[in-house]
Image (cartoon, rainbow over all chains, first blue to last red; front, side):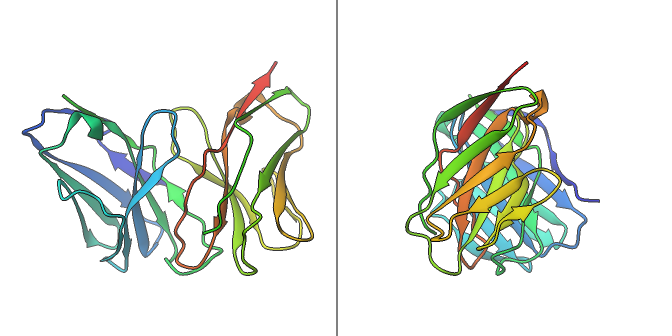
Length: 115
Length: 109
């Protein structure tokens, strides 16, 4: 099974709402990633977890809060978002964080709209 | 990670080869060259990677220049399903992918 699943597929939320995005993989990968992708732009890295510990935070605003409860699951908690945070949020996983040769497997993304 | 430069877009006819160039003139000796593609409404998917030698797999071939300052992804027979944005990435240690602008490939029937 080489699949990364993400739920929900679409999410519409108001600026005062709290919501969460969920990502799951069962490939035994120990590195998991969140990316943000605006329309017609390349994906931008937000967070990286390695062995369930936060390894990289690309200076993401605190209204985005990642969580890795176990090696298969990655969450992104959203609170007090702005309309400019509307984007496609992609989750990915890879065997490890360190190897130059490891490939990343991406989920289909969650399309987020902030009203 | 070294910066990569790719053309914004390329067109091809169905069943013809497509050659996608990528410049990475500041690449270090140990950085790998990775290619990913993103089909419409999907997440990126891995295509191929290499260090110095040319590489082949079921999806594509990767030709790397001898000085490693450039590489070319070759799709041998483009199909309509190959229409996507193709990203060339120079990857250093830490497995952090930094996506550049990519090349949008249009395949005409």
